[in-house]
Image (cartoon, rainbow, N blue to C red):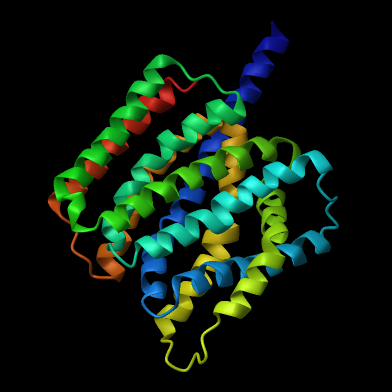
Length: 298
C-alpha cells in the first residue's frame, strides 16, 4: 500500500514538473514567429533557417563537449535525424517561407494545430493512448483554429497557409520523436545532438546563401536572429523536451494551445500588428480546451 502511495506521489510530481517545464518552453517558443517575421524582412528565409541552426549547433557542440556527454547509440541516430528534419530544418524553413505571405499574427493561429499534431504523432511514435475525451477537447481546439483561418479566407494567401500547415506537421513529428528519445538520451541532449547532426549541412548552406553584405541589416533583425538561434532553436527545447518526457507527449503537448495567446500579445505589442476580436476569441476558446484535454490525457 505504501509503495503504491509513493509511486503515485512520484508520478504526480513528475507530471507537475513536466507541465511546468512545458509551460516555460511554450513561453519561449511564443516569441519565435514574431522574431522570424522581423528577421525575414531583411534576411533570406533559407539563410535565416540555416544560420539560426548553425549558431545553435555550434553552441550545442560546445555544451556537449563541456559536459563530456556520451555519443548517441547507433539506433538513436535515425530518430535524431527525424528530430533534425522536423524542428531544426523543417519547421523553421517552412515558417520563414510562410511569413513572406502572411503576418506573424495570422501564422500564430496555426500553432493551435500543434497540440493535435503532436498528440497524433505521440500515439504513432511514442506509444501513448489518451482517453477518448482527450481527443474531443484536442480536436475541438484544432477545429476552432481551422475554422477561424477559413473565416479569414485562405484564398488571400494559399501559399502561406499551406506552408504553415506543412510546418505544423513537421514540428509535431519532431516534437513527438524528440520526446520519446528524451526518455533515454535526456532533454537537452536530444536537441543538442540533433543540431550537431545537422551541422555539416547547415554550415554549407549558410555559406552558399550568405548575402554579399550585411551592411543594410538593422539592429532589430540581428536581435531577432539571435533570439531564434539561442532561445527558439536551443534553450526552449531544453525545457520542452524535458516537459514532454516527464508529463507525456499528448498531455503536455496541449500547452501549445496557449502559444497563440502569448504570440498574439507579442505581435500586437512589438510589431504593432492588428489583432482582431476574432483572433482573441479563438485564442480564449482554445485555451479553455487545455483544461479538458489535460484532465483526460491519461
